[in-house]
Length: 116
Image 1 (cartoon, rainbow, N blue to C red):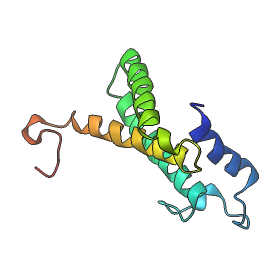
Image 2: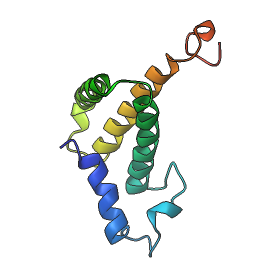
Image 3: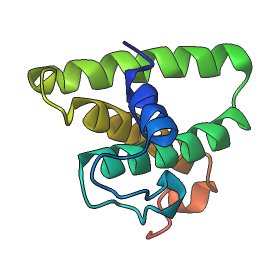
C-alpha cells in the first residue's frame, strides 16, 4: 500500500503510457495532462522535498516523519481511497507537509515564510 504511489509511475515507465504513442515519462511536462502524468509529477515533487528533508534530519526522525505524514495524509484523503486520484492526493499531501517543515528551517526573521 505504501509503495502504490510509486509503483504506477514505474509501471508506466517500463511499459509506456497508454495512448501516449511512445512518450516517455522523462518527456512529461509537469504538472501533466492526465492522471498518470500528474501522479508522476507529484511523485517527482515529493522525491525532491523528501531528499531535501533527509539532508536536514537524523535517520530516526526522518523515519518517524515519513510514517506520520503517510498516516495523516492517508487519513485526510480516505474518502477518495477507491478513486484513481487517491495516490496523487496522498503523495501531494506528503509533499506539501514536507515542504512546510522545510520552510521552518529558514532563518527566524521570516518565520520560514519567504513572503514575510
